[in-house]
Length: 448
Image (cartoon, rainbow, N blue to C red):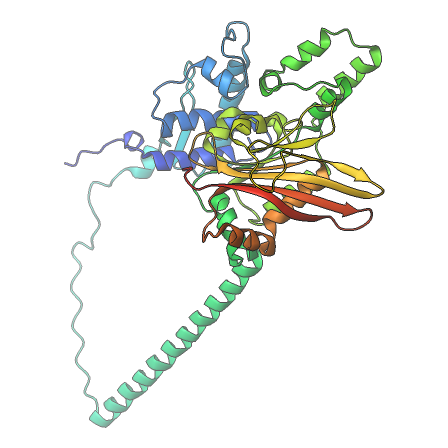
């Protein structure tokens, strides 16, 4: 008698569980629910990758929903409400879109850790019969008599067989070569950047890894709010939304209050940045690891674990501020002065500051680009900060141009891109294309 182990208690490896969790996160149930998707990914990572046996409600509130360190979970139930909704969506996935999944997942009530188990199987489908029907009583077939063949005919048949086999092999080889050539041509048409050495060297750090890559665009609503009041707010004010309380306490005029209400209710973006994001996405069309966010939607946990592309200066994309102390070229965020780029440690031939000018139809701007490790030291960060939307777009063009990148790589005397900063000067005569030239750079070969 064979002892059978119930199917649902067999061990599941973390890779299988993580793959399932990613399928649930990218399903139609969570595709448009950004916060719920990030909530699921966060508790999944803490459980499957960090080995945590429990995750506290307050930790989720801080890391996923941007709450302050000391917030009161008894008063603010945002985590419990969202987890309840997440449970329903997970259940709906396995009842519909994921009906054929052999493994199912749930977040039990009273816990924030996902649990995985094999889907229960109907016992009737796995019951073994009492006896095996293996042709009991069947008689063996009689051996066929061996045919006698003429020796000449036999040799001719063997020769024909060899010729046919050789021909078939040649045809198969030719088909394989043709398919390889066609597949290579298809790959080149779908992913032309992979055949541009300098572009491939830089961007493979975002696409050819086990990390997701996030494109984070500016929050133009936040920029307008600061501009309207001629004051800037810190990243902490932005993350906690404390800047709203500060503004409301100032007794704004009715017009300003109305504008503030309008701006805070909208998630506005920048068309130039969006075009740049589209070009980056076009490098890997259909990629499941590349995601697009507005700065308002982004969360600290993702910045530590994903590779990130931050587009826009810190006055409109506050996430840039987290890297400010690591940068040599810093864009000003003061509304009372002309926009400048500070060169914190100028070398021979460099200026200590670079100022934007726009006279007689000739505009000069700047774009600071930084390629660094992310805050978790396990992914990459690319910052593209322009003094204007046009300068930011020109910086993106620099990073996507094989000619410009390969020239920069030769300047660095490096076969592979080290971590670096580069400051571009952008020039444009009205109604003509914008041009970009390198005015200064730094390399950080010892960063890991």
